[in-house]
Amino acid sequence: MANAPIDNVQMEQTARRNLKQLIKKYNLSNGGDKDSLQKILDYIASTPLYIALADGSTAENIRVITLTTPDAVFVPLFTSKLDCGKIAESADVKLMTPKDFIPLILELGHHAVVNPFGEYFLLWPELMREHMLPYLEEYGSFVDQTFDNVPKS
Image 1 (cartoon, rainbow, N blue to C red):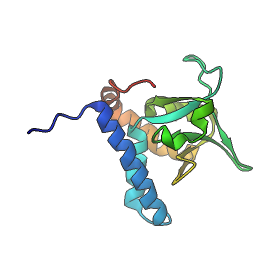
Image 2: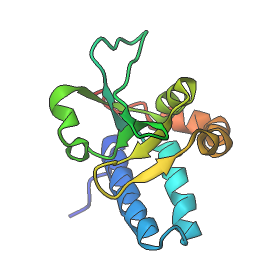
Image 3: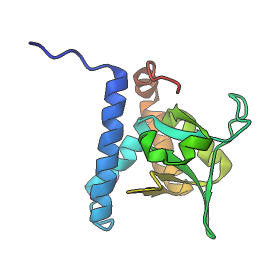
Image 4: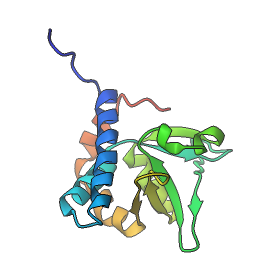
């Protein structure tokens, strides 16, 4: 029996699971695993992630839920709806592509955090500008094609 071909949705689900595993591996290395770090950055720059939208958010005026510490404001990103925790109970959680969420976070001037309620990974604006925007510029047409079949919710 032959395996059925994998579709884009399945590929993106696998990429999000792989990202979550890489973050755990990187955290266990206390930041020493540079290979995992590079892969994490590549996955974030090329994989749709979930983001929690605030009340009143529209396609023209996207407003996001943020997490605030004394030092910074973070936009939480999630690898699955389950990783959203209680945020999913009070916010509209949407799957967004990196070409949409990275510029949005940079425009807001905030940091980002992937899976803040578990094995998390922090992204500061300089990292997104220096690594992720060039990735999107270089691989943008490929990324656009990859996301054609990503469900919007």
